[in-house]
Amino acid sequence: MSFRNGLDSLLRPEDSVLVLIDHQPFQLANLHSHTAHEVVNNAAALTKTAKAFRVPTIITSVIADRGGLVFSQITDVFPHQEVIDRTTLNTWEDRNVVDVVKATGRKQLIIAGLYTEICVAMPVIHALGEGWDVTVVADACGGVTVEAHERAIQRMLAAGANVMTWLAVASEWQRDHARTEHILEFVDVLKEHEPGSGIAFLWEQQLLNTPVETLQSSGF
Image: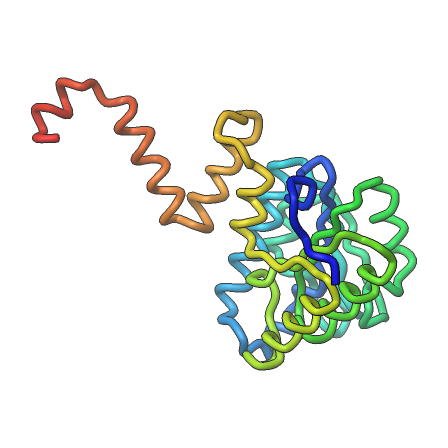
């Protein structure tokens, strides 16, 4: 087994492509590994972060006329983008999705979806077998049970996948605090979806912009 390490193994926005799979009402109805709030919040945060860092994002559903439309918290981020609807459980067997991904020219494939053990695991393992560098965003996924989610993560790790959280992906794309071209959009995502970090950043900016004499008179 080869290990994922070294600088080239870190995610880069210019080499990344995001595929979001089946964030739909039918799947949400039987989600038990996470709360609905967690998955919707994290998937929306991941989508907005991809937009902020100009990462191509493919949104796909399965039999939407029965399973429901992809959550508006995701589709509203890319309002003019068509959702690719499939019949296959394995997204990587849908030629339309694969062709769009390949057309981006990106090699770092990032995947999140419902359910982890089915519609995430299958394309991840399939794409890994074709030599793709695949990252699973675990907290923007979810399974029918905690065990189902965890076993799927173990299975994908064993197959060679990289597993992260949405905030870790965002931080890896940012990488350097001196990079300012995406920071304002990134902070907007933090404020809405990871308020502990987002509000702390705003507090830091407040303190940096507070005159020294004001701080001293306040007892700091």
